[in-house]
Length: 370
Ligand code: NAD
Ligand code: DAU
Image (cartoon, rainbow, N blue to C red; front, side, top):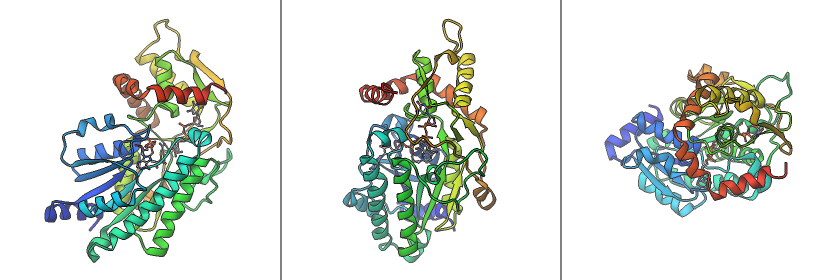
């Protein structure tokens, strides 16, 4: 019986089956929670600290749904997490909570160490304590799924093969170093304490509800507000793009069928240079929402000073999850990008609400001296 079967059975038996999602008010976490509920997978206890990146508007569509229990709090709050675990008795923890933006980690790494490393440590210890209160059968079904990134592997040369699960960890930024440290802790808690963990390392996500500090939503927002489209360096850095719903589907598959203790690379097989991504965005916007003066949005592109230590290339080999768990992405880059642009065009109020004073302060801090 897989974890989800345990969840349904537990729910029928006790009415309490649940998953604990951390960081479920952020970009990927919110998409995961919404999809989980739409698919009728059961109750979600959603623990989120509501940092600048956490946004309850992302969860408005499930506001009155009794299967969604939102708790504002920190993954490092051992008393709170222990209480939630014992009260709701989840069959899985899915850990999205993190500081996630590379540029912010360069300006101020402290929060990345606090949440991504120390927070993950406390969450692992809370899970370990909780597991001791479960029956042997429940312990056998419990999973701790840690959501990580391809950035832990460092940067590829132009003709290198994509990252496999056995690639050496070579993180380059404070963000990726903090995620790498967390991955090592999760792995060690399995090896030493037999905590039933799963680790996923995913490539760049894009889609609805992504905070407009990241490349794709920032470019859409700046294009529509007639601001420069700031390309770092020469724009030839390459990323492997995956539509967020495909990432969420992969996570469900890993939760259901993944082998305890294993890691799985997740990617879209959609490697593009940054400048090509921005050109593609401009072309979609030119067609969907032409500029009033009839010129292309490409005219707003501006090359600015590079990100310090900028990784040149990421590419994921997602062969293992394809072969072993039968997962592959449903969206191509073209279909996913068009959906994303349409979502942002249809949800300008969402963008306006998040692009508040602290967002403007961040844009000023990151872009004014480039
Ligand atoms: P995000 O920044 O949009 O969301 C992070 C969420 O975590 C926010 O809601 C925030 O409030 C919450 N949070 C932060 N610190 C917390 C704490 N101490 N306790 C509880 N909640 C806290 O991030 P995202 O892009 O949705 O990424 C989610 C996860 O996926 C991260 O672990 C990230 O490293 C990983 N990841 C992201 C991508 C990507 O392209 N965005 C790709 C691969 C992996
Ligand atoms: O690879 C997975 C990672 O992808 C995740 O782990 C991170 O949480 C997520 O933020 C993302 O990291 P990147 O640094 O790759 O994403 P970002 O959107 O910040 O930048 C993508 C590329 O675009 C990168 O090469 C930097 C460049 N860029 C970014 C911004 C914000 C620009 O050229 N201009 C910009 O204004």
